[in-house]
Length: 386
View 1 (cartoon, rainbow, N blue to C red):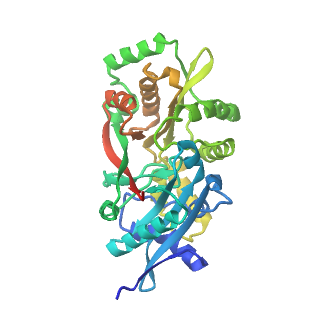
View 2: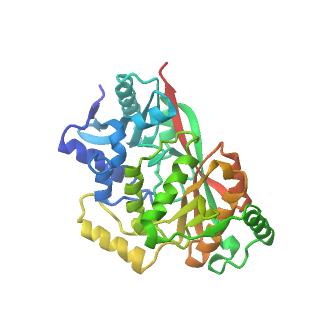
View 3: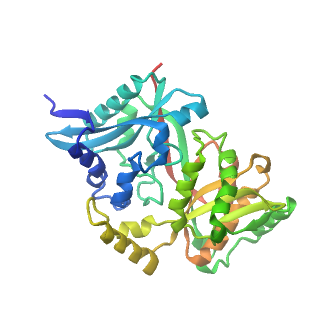
């Protein structure tokens, strides 16, 4: 008789088991980045994570022999269902040891929870939407996480597929080696590419500028409009309201390097932007963050590697938006070119452009033209009930 049980989080012991599970699952995985404990706790707290005001959710822990062996969240994102005109449930925070029985029991618990609320299907993993962490890594496990991306164990995919899930969408993560353009010297920019980009710049009178952090609040207001318009027709998109964008902007501000942010204007009106984020996960991995450790000690180690040692050679192009009327003009290629060219002298030679929908042919062609390669694939799965 199996000693496995799956139950909702209902006590402080359950909560601690849920929160600490990633440290158990990835304890010997050098590519996983342990988050700061306080940030990890607040991410699942509606009092701190404003995205959760749109979401109903339940947390589950799988136990075997009195020990936690896996976790999952079942949730319904009402903002997603309203905007996408769907009746969808989700699962996320799927972290489990190499235990097939536990994995299937966790998935079943999530399915039963969302089914009881009348949805037509379930997708995942997403914790909690396309605006936070989404997708299961299915290739590229040998590459470390970059900032604000999830991680997975290779056996997760088999568990999910054996539970009857099928692919809903693949998310491509592109990688560019800045050494191809001369590294910090940036003296090997392809002449042909430079000519093409200059033509794009002049064809539509594009003006490219960097971000002005002294005018941070106004910059955020300018980019809000582009963000929600640019992604409105994307698969899986959930618009963020002013409160969510303002909170995200405040959280990201300490990490933004204004020299590599690109804003494209036409007649002084912003029409596109690219927001690369220095890969703070590099110093975070070196900070060896552990659950329950004093916050000041975690921060001290992080700041030492980040601000003093400057142990960041990676950058993730996290946000890139183009108003619909300017798509197909080459402005996306122009922004990628400018971000890479400006970033190399600042030491950002390990460049990730993510995530890009596998179906976004225009954007994928622009990235490939730079010489980038797809080095990771994340998959979102779906299971229909009716």
